[in-house]
Length: 525
Image 1: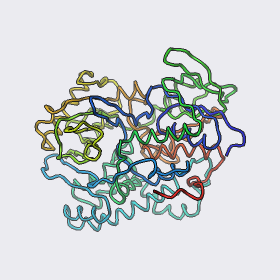
Image 2: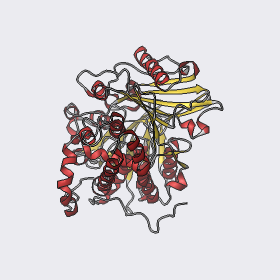
Image 3: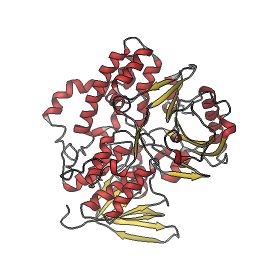
Image 4: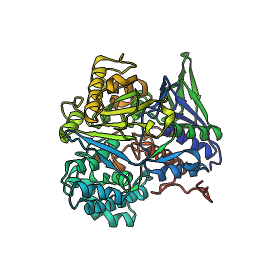
């Protein structure tokens, strides 16, 4: 606990900002969160129309132990705060040109049985693969994810150094080669390679250490918080307020104020255009790192100036479709993936020298109404469709009921037609009663994300772990960072860890593991 309460200004009311605020207030600090939009959640937003409620961002509940740990730090539990439902199947996979979908169930034996049915001998190879994935995941959690690299203490741990001979190949070999050396069937390769997208990358670019992702969906389980992912945001915001955090929405931070390279607070502008300075001893920037560095600080105080960003790789952009559909859609599971046959070309379209929206596209569909009746009116279904596209806001912005820019709406029409054909729903377009599109242009304009990216900095090797931006400014004392662009990385669990890393940094804790939970820990209900 802080002996003298700090005045802390947190920039951004997404999950990282709210989590940081809650943890620091629990330390005894006086915390104010400033969110430019009227709605909290950032990328993990929500939108409602005509009885439908859509999550506008994350939809896979993975790494449950990270959520459990975060809530226990605040004296509660995920079981108390969320109504979690395990999904079975975990997801369904349609492949271009193949009429038979794969039903993917979590659990080593269930997944191994599927792999064996598809490819003789693949079941045992998957067991070995998932053993390695679990080992890599445990290594990441105990040695990397909770390390803020404020020192080299964690990297010098003898237990880690002994692992280097096994670890080095996983860092230097791309994921796709790791997979292709073990499995021949293209569909199985895609099931194991697609999680790279959740890391903002391509299986042809991210290191094979990230085969650990398969431990999460195949070895462990996939869950859904009933009420949607906005319930996670609501729970953390409530816990923050209970600890005295002030949350101001509709208030944009326009500058980080400094004196002699020390943070003194933030300058904010409210919806009426009134500008005021808010003093603070500590500033935590939990929004887009590019905007923080290049817009809120003068050039001489930027740790990550434009020249630095010119050499970095963003995650893909996203074309999102929020669709309210009349009638039932049993063809789709809660999670459904569509994979193109030309896997490499699909990723070249997104990350290559001549970026374009893939057509056809490998894409993801979430049908939360399969699990949660409250997200759609009776007799209707709720679909969230995510198409990875280049991180480029220039094609324009989306809109409601087809009123977005022409390039965006035309691409959305193609996606709807693709889903209809591949999944056997020929009348899908005619049954849509609510439609909204969201594009990289919207991510850039509404969330301030660099180049309109949808997730944060990609997890290629040179942007992972020790190579990822740290959580403290090198130029401004008292300025810290949280969120998807900094350690440890992309995703809701990572953002929760990034909040914890700010607390560790302020405590002077340079250990590689998570904070100790209050004892005795609250029993799961």
